[in-house]
Length: 90
Image 1: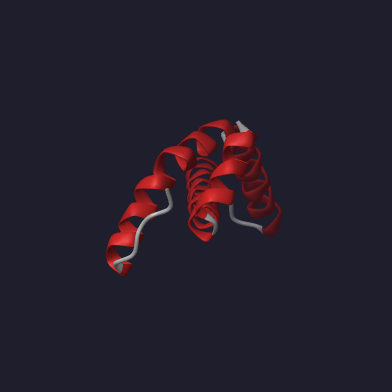
Image 2: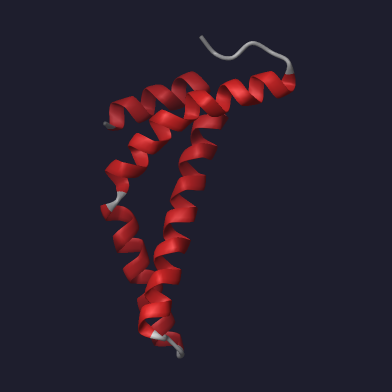
């Protein structure tokens, strides 16, 4: 699976990296929000625990995020190419 991600980044460059990082940040913030709502964190230690738990959950969801990146990157590259009026990577 990581080979697919490496090939994707080699083929699409910045679009592949931006797609992966966007999915990562959205997943991390989503897990943090869910944990925060469920735990009612108020202090600094609780907040740090929420972010640690969110990071762990995000790392556990890595295979799903890679699959999403592999699926979305060609579509996003085609959209970017259409907007820029250039040819998408072959």
